[in-house]
Image 1 (cartoon, rainbow, N blue to C red):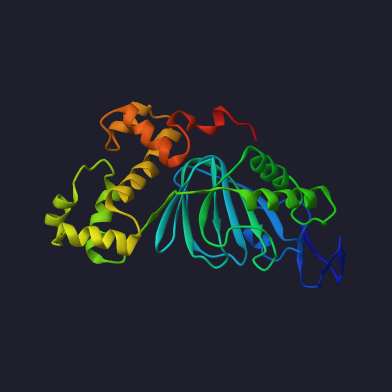
Image 2: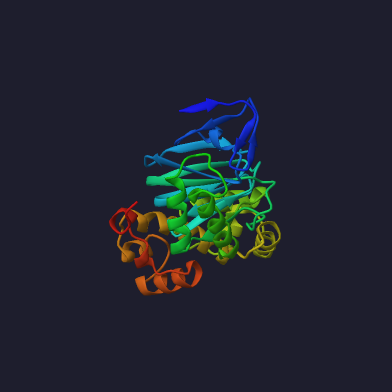
Length: 284
């Protein structure tokens, strides 16, 4: 339970009278926005299909799931986050989250004004084995803590690991142009579609050359690259639910499991066989 305190020091931090300090654990994100320390860690569970409506946070956020898949949407992008990655969300970024599978979420709330090594823009980063264990360890500590405590030392190590984390290309840019919006919406609904830009030209009324130019100008990547990311987003969800690789390949536009596996590993940095339900291979 939280308590109110008069002005005093907590570790080396000064806390004012109107600040609420949770003494143990909390699943209310509001308890993490005004913490005295730079990093706070929250644990929370969500059922398959649960949707967190669009919202913002006062602090930066590192969103990590030790099991399940999270799909994050902003106005301009969609992100798929597997248990091998975590999404960094700068303060004030409006976003929604959809859970695929039962999600065990661990969230770091990071003071946006603190001088810490961390990403400067929204991105997905690779979670190393060490970073994973540090996040889990900090999430078991009390919400507020002093800088020389065990939690304070864990937070320092998290900062170092986060500063070294490799960025993963797991986002799907979303278009502004109305012609691309129709094309992209249909591909998001059916990633296995093998329609070419010539085919889409007949659907949208724009020439093949115009569509290619719009993809590069509006989305920053070519049509084939964008479609591949869509397919891999959906493939991640299917693989995490235990679907066989051959089935996933067939339902995501690939003619063989081997072709799918090679492309998946090249883009995602891991083989499809590594994406299995996390509950089978990880313990909290």
